[in-house]
Amino acid sequence: MDRGAKEGLGQPFPKARAEAYEAKLGQLGEIAMKSIKRKVIPAIRSGSDGAIEDAIDDVQNDVDRRFGDDVVEKYADEAGESLDEEHSAVFFAALGLAIGSDIIGGDSEALGVPRGAVLPPPGVAGPAGEPVSRAVIGVRVNPQPQMFAAEFTAESVEYIGVLRAGIKEGLSDAIVRAQQFGDTPEETAQRLLKIWEKNGVPSQIPIDRVKKNGERILVTAENHARFIAHDQINKLNGRLNQTRQEAAGITSFIWRTQQDDRVRPSHEEIEGQQFKWAEGAPGIGLPGEPYNCRCSAAPVIDKEQILNSDDFVSLE
Image (cartoon, rainbow, N blue to C red; front, side):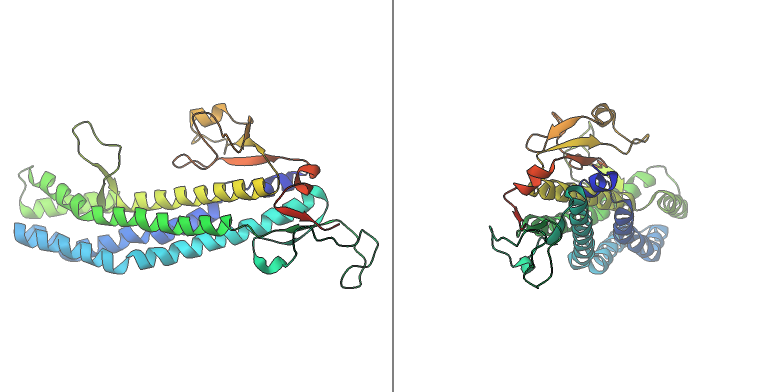
């Protein structure tokens, strides 16, 4: 099969789309840092525990107001819908290239062709009176891509909400630890500001991975927001690859990595190996499923598989 068709049917990690989404979600840390400089640092310098607590509450309120669920939902909707549209366009173009047929319709009701409909064979006048020169594949309605885009938005809102809520505890914990050095309030403020400017705004995430002493893991808001964006984008890309390949009658795929030094050893070991969509790679799953996985799925197909798929209609 043509290389372009393979890449279109099993689209690799959408780096540009992930970076654009990372930039959007990364604003969470910027908003928090501006509020910290205006409110928390002066409170630390005052040496008043009450003022510090009030300032941290103010930061949390600022973040919730300026980067709330509605803002994240807007960013996620835009990212998810754009990725879905781009994936659809490339996939169906590649599908036509792979089987030498014209593709009509897509994942929408605009197709308007009932299952089993037949167009005249090549060389015979079609519905518009023009000769049909090539086989045509009509794509039936498939709601899964839209469902995945909706799930992408819901998950992004949830994950960023948890991250946002952890900023208060992250700041409180950092301040308490800094005060144990016995520095003056001014020295404490200077040291913390230097750390936060270098590493980012701290947040505590209540996830299953905890330290041995039971404390929740401390992360930086900016980095974790970008991780969420990166991870979610590739999960959606993986889901779109799977559902559209399976709809086209593609039951197996070749595992492809980015082939760089960031690839997990376990994923590097299965580079080039073939798996079934229904089963995935043993102990790993499907490309894009594991956290921060940038792998993709090159299709294993033939023309007859596509023409005989239940979700595609042959109009030749």
